[in-house]
Length: 289
Image (cartoon, rainbow, N blue to C red; front, top):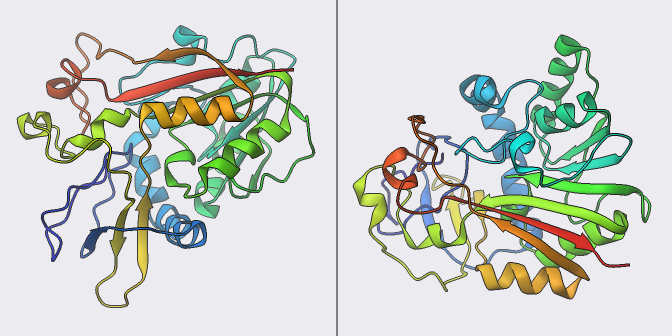
């Protein structure tokens, strides 16, 4: 999980996301950010962080594994995608392709896209180590490089969606590449988490900012003024409304409970918080004909 680094904007809480890079020196702010600025920040950030991320979390994720979030809910247990055997399945924000590899192992055709070249290099490495191949390409969620109605399922497990400024375009792209009746499933930081500090301890249970404040969270290198990380917040109502706008029928909204005996701390996710408040929201929707 990202952790807030004390600095000139020390009073601004870092929002939660399932990464835990530790920026050495950043200025933290909440302000409007364009899609281009978000992309130029988050691609290089994930390139820098990919090696550490895979070394820290690779075993938990599994080389051929599908985990929806830090609580450890697997797709085998959730069944959010439905049957994948014989289906073309696109993962948006695929990272090292662990989830897509699970899909392929189950008889589907898993294909990945990610903004980070370094994450895709890890995907190729695991392809070779497991002999389970995931075709992947570098692309953004707002311009998927596929023809219309190409996939039966599109999913994102804590992938690109929280890092996209133009979310309307990203969801429209998912609808475009899905076949009618296709399934769209994605997990994100539970929107209510944005009211709380990103702290795995008791301090992370005390609300400190407005749930309805949708101003993006921004980190900037104080030496160069370059934006190095951006994350965007939407409320539960925002997500539901956006899905409906693009002809998606909401099938389910899962809020995984923290499992007994699960003591793994992943940034702001912990048993201390997870036993009392949700950390992950998993949306499951079908594209109407």
